[in-house]
Image 1 (cartoon, rainbow, N blue to C red):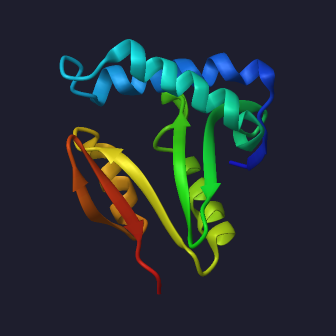
Image 2: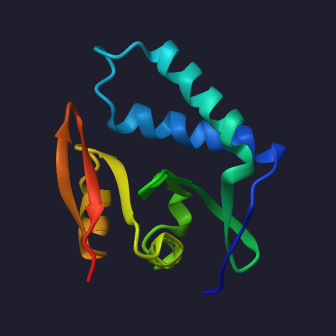
Length: 145
């Protein structure tokens, strides 16, 4: 399957928000968080970074989205969402490989919900390890070499 990464546009903002929303509903511990405040923060993050989001195209269909942000000494894979129909088809692996190539010698890190055991296994298979435990989530860092 051919995977292409193309810039997101204004039409994608609501779709990215819905994927974020579903992800939070599935993996976040909802009662303790201020849901409306979290959703407002996510909406603002998407708006501020829309020009940095990429669409993941699998053949001729939009399979998902991701966002990579560069900090001084590292990169952060801030979002990676694949629609269910495209999961388990090595698309995510190809995206991670491209992200690692972009990061080069810099550290690549990401946050993952503790309850998202499938994603944790996926990232571990690709050389990430849990580096920091936070309430309900982990920071995972790619091992170099």
